[in-house]
Image 1: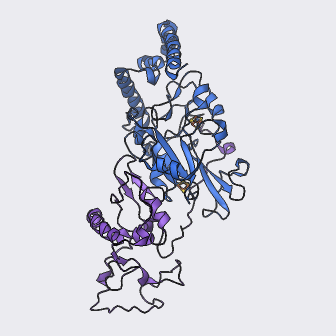
Image 2: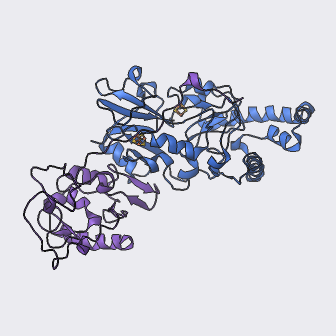
Image 3: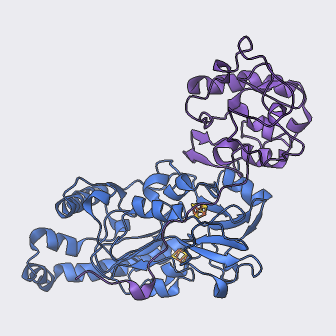
Length: 305
Length: 179
Ligand code: SF4
Ligand code: SF4
């Protein structure tokens, strides 16, 4: 079955489920009984991002912006920029240059509005021993020496690999996560039911769950967001790296590329034969993390030396 | 200095290339990557140190080409970049301190110091030109800033300096939801 027709089937099934719920007075009564009023009911009946018409989307975004503003006391913009024509994003990371300084980890937190308390980080930097090579048994994510790089060690940052064949998408029972045309695997936080199947399926530990109401001091919130990216999330949903969808769909580099002091991080359009990323794939020693699993990452590790 | 940088490079580079320096005969950039289209921020000078000629005025300070330990000024500079075979005037121009020079004597602006580095590190210069080595910021599909070699490597002591890592993640057993 082609991707499209299977999606269509899934959508039809989902629509009928919604139609049933929407038609049932019980749903409306339930929403009202919990005291969330008209907006709450609308949120309850909201469709999946992919099924929204432009008008619905505008209305929903205005509602979500209002909710976020009430919660954080600040104006927040939620964009919905679509994938650009002829663009498929790819990422490459130079393992011979990364010094493990974690500047990328913290720039990502600042950019993407994950919970600070309890803490959620989308990038994990693994410290490994040069002698052992890429060996997860011997990897340490909690290293904290006075200075990096430490003698005899190398560093391997891991984040969502934006798989072309993403197991996380396959297992989602409600279609709350999918692969966009530009290759970014996204999550509709309003559709996610929090079952965490995707977390179990992802071999890279790239997905993170909001066990508690995300604690973000209002001053730390980044107000420039995207519906499928860094907008404030509710409790009980899964989130992950989106290649900074709110930045990259406007032509900017992801925040981790901008901050990296060693220039280890490279990003660009895989469909453009003149891009840096294509040059790396064609001219450097490249490897895929857990390539044997056939997840087909769009995140490549390479040796620049 | 910054606004005139690209123009300077544009005028300077073809001349240098025409001189046919060996170091510049590195494999060509892939098609579409214009080596002239380099927007580098100004070099990271110590405040107030440039132009060098404001102190190194040949009238008040006659140039001294003798190789010697520096005393008084610049004594803080430690040369950890092949000190046995190298000293200041291998890169800094004796007669015009506001310029650098290549081994063949051609003068180079500080903003194009990568040409100097590329004389020995040709492979890195080539990778830098195509955006593999070094850092670029800005737009993946548009204007970028290219960091110069000297933004990351101190030319006198080029080894990348160790950094204090930012804090590690909280281990799972210590994560607690707020009450
Ligand atoms: S900021 Fe760059 S050098 Fe530092 S840990 Fe991240 S990738 Fe490595
Ligand atoms: S790395 Fe994990 S979360 Fe990201 S696309 Fe692949 S399976 Fe999904």
